[in-house]
Image 1 (cartoon, rainbow, N blue to C red):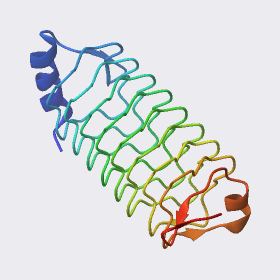
Image 2 (cartoon, rainbow, N blue to C red; image 1 turned 120 degrees about the vertical axis):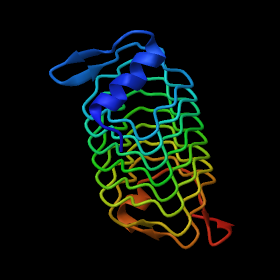
Image 3 (tube, rainbow, N blue to C red; image 1 turned 180 degrees about the vertical axis):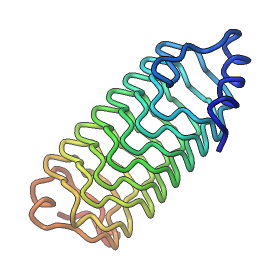
Length: 203
């Protein structure tokens, strides 16, 4: 993990000027960081609202408690990143790589995760209500106490996951792969759509 000063030097090169710092945290609202190499950067608590980080590399970065509301994270590499308690409300993460990322207790409401890779990600206590996870890969992900109310999980790969403590009320499971998945029958009955269970479509 890079230090705060090392991260500051990297951001200065990318932006062409020193980044603004408020209360000891980077202020990068609306910044253009498209394609930036920020691997293992220390962006803990940073304000990155509305920034363009599409196709950037933030693998292994420290984004704990960061504010990424409305950020453009299309095709972003966030594998192994630390996003515990980060706020990504309304962010665009289409096709992003979030494999093995720590997203525990993060706010992921109303975000676009279509086609994203969340394999082996930690989503303990995360709020994914009303988010779009259609065709997303969640193999091996931890969804304990995850809020998936109203989420779009059409065609998502959830095979083998323990969903017994996840909230699936009003979630759309049409065509989702739930083979070998453990489910909470009560919440499952309140979900919508016909998922694939044991290679057959049934509910």
